[in-house]
Length: 318
Image (cartoon, rainbow, N blue to C red; front, top):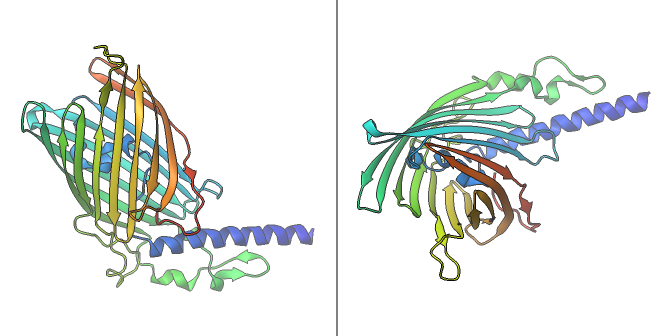
């Protein structure tokens, strides 16, 4: 019985240590945004200039469970909606993102609203300029943290740690601004976006403004939807859609590229992910279904997990 107690006690301490490790890592990598492998599935998160870009209402839902071998290491939910507004000569959109880390010890909630203006440059091309404003809140569940000064070696944690006295606000919030431009046509789209224009501070401690800023994120992306005709027929057989994205935020880099094909609503494709130094990190697969009916479009996507490539040196990704 004593042995079982010790095993459970040790297991509980290991869980606390791993959870604290994630929070400590977050403190040193505080300036990196959540990164979705299927970046095209939530265009508003990629670039606010996508607001209303498809000409009809659009809903995007995403779920991410990273490092699922641990107990809820990184769990992310996202929901977005955008719609064109003729009177505004553009489109509006909104999305909500919730990212829970280390089994809910650290939680980030984002609520963002965007507007994009449409400028017709020619018969085939249109320029979109977007702006986004949002509110972010970082919440720290101090009740799940265990420090040396409140840990009893025989019976577990007790009391309140003195380490928590320096945390001025465990629910810290701030306003955030982003912008982007997009060149859009029937078959091509490409653009750039800059997130966190003011590089806001997001620390729980007073006096750490210089080390806890949210670094500005730069994104460049390209995509296409190209019809394929076989054997000289005028009837389209299927579409292919190459996609490329490059992102830079502080010391973190990401470069995704790949292609997917669509036929009669069925979609399948694959991507590679790496950093700017050509250090491969993962292969990403996707299978989905798209159906358009009247003025509405419904998209259901089945996302397969990434196939992570084994490396001697890790690539810096979230």
